[in-house]
Structure formats: structure tokens, C-alpha cells
Image (cartoon, rainbow, N blue to C red; front, top):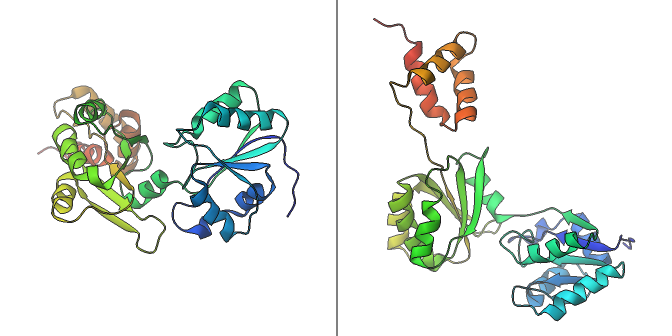
Length: 282
């Protein structure tokens, strides 16, 4: 279908494994832009062939020259519609596309996002680890010292942590996490949306011992790690008073949820403390 598009940059999410996940709107945009800026024309070419999209492609990735970037910006300045896609998932997420987006914003060009698949969010919802608050970190530094420094900065964050990792670095990363973060709940996902999709859940130590014994998994991985659980000091009168006050007109469940949301302390810990305080003293 021919659709007249406003000149600007269209950020189009593509499938992360299953080609059927490309949205109808994404197909429409890809069919009607002037050209498609993509990481690898061979990868995107397979997707376009699947949906009979004939739009020209232009390679744009982290190693692209200034000339390529300027050609894209020049086309947009001439009121042409240009799409940007990554090999898989949403452009600009752990992807050089954000640099082009930033330039378009600086030049006040029109920008629109066509949402779709994203490995980090897909892995998170499959993990079974809290999804209400999370931090997406992307890839940790491949060098051991820098990786340790990055993880050290995440120790006190009471939020679920999401990382991308390569198979060859997985065991080393898990070992470093155990040392710096402690033995937290975690999940590792691979081959998301594909026939052999896999989600392995357990503690960091359990996952470390498992992957230490088996061949390195194939494909990029999403690693989800539970946030720091703040421990309640049982003699913290101020916190106890807050719990006692809430229990006067709220249930144990509602009290635990409210205080957890306000403090970052897990509901499980708050509930256990509230339960103890709610029992009559002998």
C-alpha cells in the first residue's frame, strides 16, 4: 500500500528472532520510505524479501563514515522519509542508532518510532524477577577490571538489573557478579521468540555452576539479575512505627506493598516484619 509519509526519521523495530513479529505498521513504513538505513544489508535484506519490500537500503552502523551519516541527514533535510532499523529489535537500544536520532533532534527534524520487539523487555517478562522497577545496562565492559568497576556501581541499587552478554564471556561475568553482587536470583534467556527459545532461572551460583559445565550457548544472551534486597534492622523503631501505623487501617498485604514501593525494601521482607509486629505479644 502506498502511503505518503512526512519527511523525517522513522525508528522501526524489527523481529528479534521470529520474522512474524514484524508489525503491519512497520511493513507499511518500510515500503514507503525513501531508503532504509540498516546495520547489515544482508540481514535486513532477508526480512525485506520475506515481506516483498523493495525499498533501497543503505548500510549505517558504528563504523560508518561521516559521508554516510551526512547522506542520511541530507535526505531528511530535503523532506524525505528515512527509516532506521537494527539487525534485530529496537534501534538505539545498545545500538549506534541513538547518535543519528540525537543529530535529528538537534536539527529539529521530525522523528517517529514504530515500536516492536525488544530482547531486554522480552527477557525481563519471562524471567520471573520483579518487573515494576528495573535498570537496563546493556553490555558490560569486556575487560575484567572495568567490568568489576561497573558492577560495583550497581551493588546498592534495589532494582532489577538487565544486561546483554556474549556466550564466551558468560561464565566469567557470572563469577564476577557473585563476587560483587552476592548470590541473587537471576535468569538467562536465549533464542528469544525462536523455536528453541530457552529461559534458565536460578541463583547466580546455580547458573554459574551450570554454564561452567556445559558448552557455551549460542547467540546473544539476556541476563536478568534481582536488585539488592535492603534488610530491615529489627530494632529500627522508626520503621516499625510506620508498619504499626499502616496496620491500623490496612491489611498486611497492602501495608507491605506500600512500604516496599516507598523504601525499595522487598515486599517479602516487609511482609515478614509486619506479620511479626501484628501478632499479639505474650
